[in-house]
Image 1 (tube, rainbow, N blue to C red):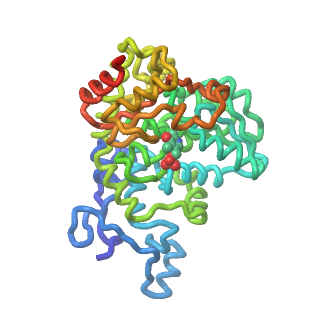
Image 2: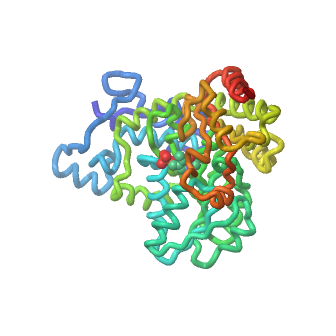
Image 3: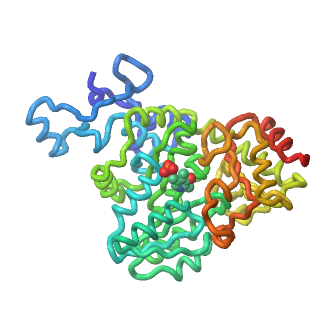
Length: 412
Ligand SMILES: *Cc1c(COP(=O)(O)O)cnc(C)c1O
């Protein structure tokens, strides 16, 4: 049975008109968007289409395809049926015209910047961005003559001062990792528009459940789908959402660079997305309650969580976000690096690992996990003290996680 001839569920398609889509809630979209109403073998779930290439009936059908009379697949590097379903779901969740999936968040970032920038162009960055994103810009884009400027996170005036007539893109994350600084998207977008510069937000930590940056007028939204969108610590993927017009050259370059997902990986992502809203509700609840527990604990010096009134981004976050996610960063009072490591080692439910956004809680000490080879001066510059712990709350029961942290924080 051909997948082209059967109708798709008419309601939540990414390409149905926007008014129609707005009537559907997050979970209806994540379960149904992009899926055919009738599937091969009458199965309720999608088949994993393992083909690396796709056959044509005859020579005329190749010509029809090239002349775009017939939507269909051609060769695996340009896309596959499982990808179309996932892209429709991501576009629907983001209220975007289009989404493109890549093989990782970094592949998405590199793919977008390679498509948009040329020698002589400049970009301006908030300095709390993911270190590999910054490394790609100052080490690799620089080899192609693209100039990177870094300014302090959230400082719109500093960003404006760094803009020149050659500036092509303003880049930020929101919230940032591990400090959870939230950028005022209205100001960020207004700055871009005033100087006719495009804007990119890496909203991996927020997810489209907590904020939809395109509604603020941001041009591109990036996600590491490895995190909350996949949600099960079992896959890598990335995505860029935006308008069809702006993404056309990004999709074309991806077809050349080849940073695409296998159909199996896409099926895992599709399956993960079905429970996206339910998981986010628990991640948000666990993040908020664990942040509150830690903020009231005598051994904790400081908690970074935008859902706490004490966080510098609380006002912006409260106004613009539905919830504040599962990532909680905290400092242990009067602890050196070893005493801090002992607390991480005593925790029983969260596993010690990098990453975030999966059902399993993860915990780490940034000094050891990400900044071990950096000089103390550099760590200070990046705001990574020895007594910092980052916990990525999963979906386990809140009370179990709190009791676990409580026992780990007990002085021996
Ligand atoms: C993990 C992460 C990335 C990189 O994504 P990968 O899927 O690991 O390539 C980029 N930005 C943020 C904010 C991340 O957390």
